[in-house]
Image (tube, rainbow, N blue to C red):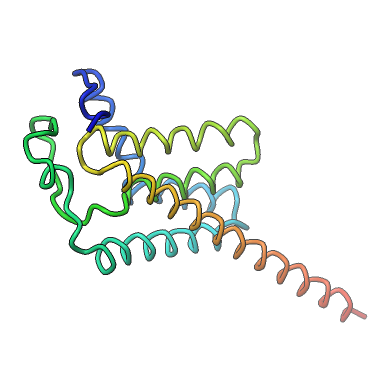
Amino acid sequence: MVINKYNSPEFDYVFKFWTYLGDGIIWVPLFAYVLFLKKDYFISVLAALIICTALTQLLKRIVFWNDFRPIVVLANKVRTIPGYYMNRTHSFPSGHTSTAFTLALLLASIVKRNIWVFVFPLIALFVGYSRVYLAQHFVTDVLAGIFVGIVSAYLSLLIHEAFRKRQQKLQTEEIKKEP
């Protein structure tokens, strides 16, 4: 665990909290944002939540149900932070990373400002890094989480586009029906 070896009390503090940017509760601010400012993206955010959660949990609980975390596999070879809870099972893929990347890519698409195309994925990348730093996941778990996040965001944006086109078609048909 090369990443886990390079540590400091400051990094312990930062990554212990940074990792929560990939926690499931992080969907709440995104839903609030789209409900109040970008209502047309509500369906895509809902689809992203469902797709990301379904893919991650399918892989974690059914396909790779027996994958242990670094604390079990590597035992005394990983460094842990005193008082930080260590999960022992359901390692593959990293759910925090899949959530962070799904949100990052969706937000980059919704906000549509060039700088956020780099900033949001960078934030998500540090969530993945934090998972390895905290000895909660292996690098392969994080890479799989990134892949799940990319697929989830992509599929939800395809759903958004299909929904948008359907709405436009219905509006066009309504206009044609007016006398």
